[in-house]
Image: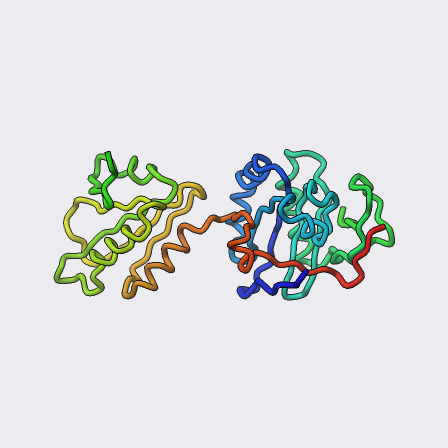
Length: 133
Length: 126
């Protein structure tokens, strides 16, 4: 797939992947205040996993066409930061705030391209996957 | 019944008018002698161009000193206003700024704007 340098504005992108339109709408509603607060620095985008399965994988989210998850892209640095699933739906927005903050502070290593087969595996291998929590 | 291209809005129905569509534009027009940017004409052009997408209104009120264009994005709960109305381009820029969703959905049409795929060179499956 061609790497597209989309971000002329310099902003990073926060992607939410899900094959369910209802789920994506729900995520939009929950994260609208956050998107507004970070609008100067981040662009939030939802993606239908079924339409962009290779992008799901490329952003470090397991499941391809059925993948569900959040990943942050910094196009200027060529970095990707897939986020581990939050412990609950109620904690999701807070978890995303923490994740974004930690990325901005350099506390999270960018994804190195190693995809774990198990999405539930929270133990990282060599710290390569989702070690931010 | 066909909705008018531009609705005249009075004080009594202004709130309901603003909430009547996903994206609503309201133009306050200066007196003709002050209307150097011809906002009245441009607003009509704008309404005709986007009539299937947005709702347009003009308050029935005394002329204001300066033209003002306001936009209400009810999906995102955002509102915008501008007095930079000199050109068609500046108005279209304002339209885009207000009507573009805060959280867009990636589609084939907007990929160039929102698609950023950076595969790490060492990407592999384990």
